[in-house]
Image (cartoon, rainbow, N blue to C red):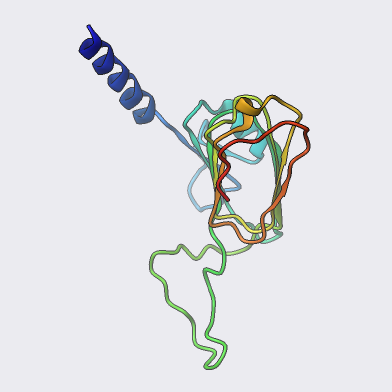
Length: 166
């Protein structure tokens, strides 16, 4: 019976991860936007998401500012930073084929971590501010912030935030 329960649990985990959706915010291209996948606003993309989805934030010519509340287990991913850098001494471009050099920039991102966001990952953003709400510790634990330049974390509560990785 224990083996059967373990098998069912593993199948549920695989099924949940296999159905994750990537939603794009601020995506601009010559192709038509895809309804249900492309959004102009972070909060609308978040509200349409399910646990385990990824929200990609795109830069823009006017430096968009993305704001919202995260209340689901999501991956929030930006384009990275310093994708078009130059060597200071020779002024030659640093070529890095692993990075996508997108035109424009993101001015800033401001997110509030709420109930249900445990296990979320925020990565590849410049000037990101994360604020916690006044919730119990288990509801805002296991948050990972990685590969972000100049992150600012505001713990706006009197409780504990367990297992944060910055």
